[in-house]
Length: 204
Image (tube, rainbow, N blue to C red; front, side):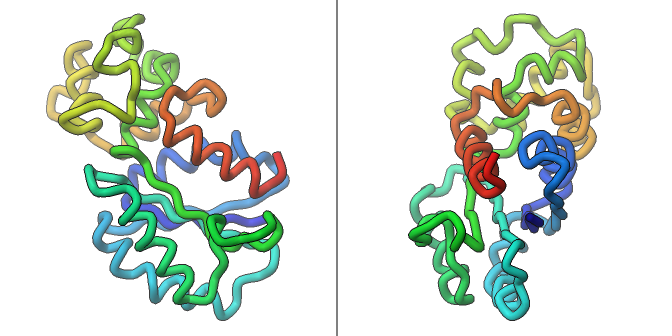
């Protein structure tokens, strides 16, 4: 099977390039297509999906990944589902059987950085001076529930340990942490949903 990922920005591309092979295995292939932010992805999505619908092979799937960014999850998901429906593609939510799925829509709550914070061991492997117990603190215990922005929380965590003095370089940090991530131990609920959906697609 081949999976096409449509994501908001290069930091998501960097993370998925490291994470996805650990979920779908070596027998399956994938490609990540980054956009210039969330609005660029959402604006181009209907046209892009219509293009896929004209030639999508039977063994290809499309995964659309966007950040919640404090939007209403249900409204955002409905917008993604409608774009696929209008293009004539069958989503995971509408498919009666796994074999009929063409599109999977997933939302990172509230941002991709929650997924990075969800694996404390990976954070410390990339940045060894980070506290060995940061994920036990109330602020970080549930990554999807972090208030005030997850990228800001990750930046502050790294800066307290003496890293990223000039600010969070999102692509570099996403690549460094995701290189050490184990999908099975991530504490982010939205990552767990993403993980399960990919595993189901490839029958893992």
